[in-house]
Picture 1 (cartoon, one colour):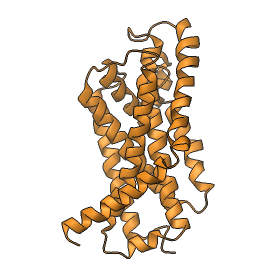
Picture 2 (spheres, one colour; picture 1 turned 60 degrees about the vertical axis):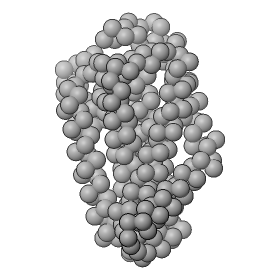
Picture 3 (cartoon, rainbow, N blue to C red; picture 1 turned 90 degrees about the vertical axis):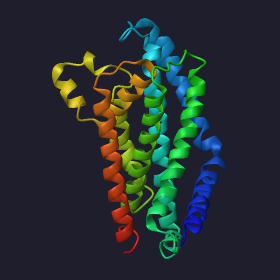
Length: 257
């Protein structure tokens, strides 16, 4: 395939992925906005108004970056894991694999669909947040970098989950028992400086903690960890997961069996 044909193939797959979740936006975009509104009402207004400021910011302002990123993480992951597993289940992923379309473009197509869903949902959540607080823009470049890289990372993670999944039940195990605990324990609703020293060290093993703090730095200018270290961690995870995903796709793991 020449470059023009490759671009057409990628664009077609991406459009298919976007139409897939936008046709049912009431199920894919709206719930995140409603859930976020509840977080802000309960944690921000009701509970947050009774709490002291954190790093010179009100509790409401402090939790906004993490909640936005949580919505991006969940939706980028969910889009790819469900889409690619459905392609496996319905046996039309084989048609793409035997086509002239390079495997890296197939991977990029699915991942890009997850990234776009994450960004669209993140924008909706940000819009909801504007009704509860004034959003900070300390460093817009870092904020956008973290948003995009995080969406890419968890789109790749969703792809890996789909590769190894053997049933629809399998695509819910990781989000329930791994992703959700890591997200909630990643410092969305608190600063790790508030934890005992032992649990502070344990929190440093949580990769999502680095993403949330980098996002918080981009919006508010405060972070519990060095931001350059956090960005390097995210880039490293993206590189490793992309290489692993492409390797498994090339080998046909979970597909050719």
